Length: 152
Ligand code: DAT
Ligand code: MG
Image 1 (cartoon, protein in one colour):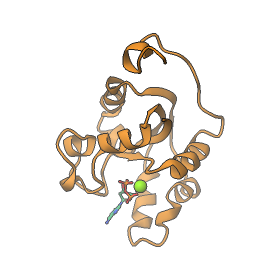
Image 2: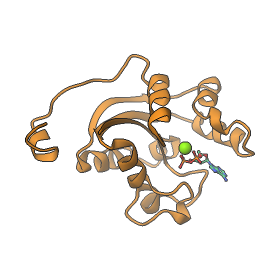
Image 3: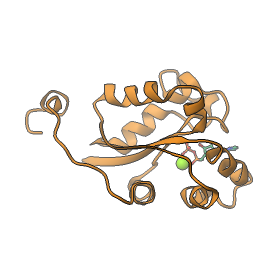
């Protein structure tokens, strides 16, 4: 099933000059970029994004981190995009992230784990509405018959 997922390259990824390499991984996989922007969000916005974690002891630090500098928000589309992206991102705690995943290749600490990705269809819908209230794009790509098959 075609899905859309919200992905953030967090401020550590921007500061470490990893934006291009992270986007390239998703492009290489064949996922379609349907939204992309560089934003520096304020505390109110960050608290809405991470509302499910409001009661966690790390919540204040998480909000401080995500608001500490610009980040890159993107919307990615493809078959089973939500679980495909989560698998590419790797486990939340980078010491448990498999090599070959983004966190497993680029991160060491849970507080600096480089990337956010929607964890399910409801979360993805809510996060895409929050980060891309203007909507995302739809467009065909010439490569789609090779990436997605002749019926695409
Ligand atoms: P994920 O980002 O893999 O979806 P999550 O939704 O459980 O993970 O948590 C959101 C973010 O909160 C996570 O990317 C980093 C931070 N975080 C989670 N657990 C933490 C902890 N024990 N200490 C510090 N930060 C934590
Ligand atoms: Mg999460």
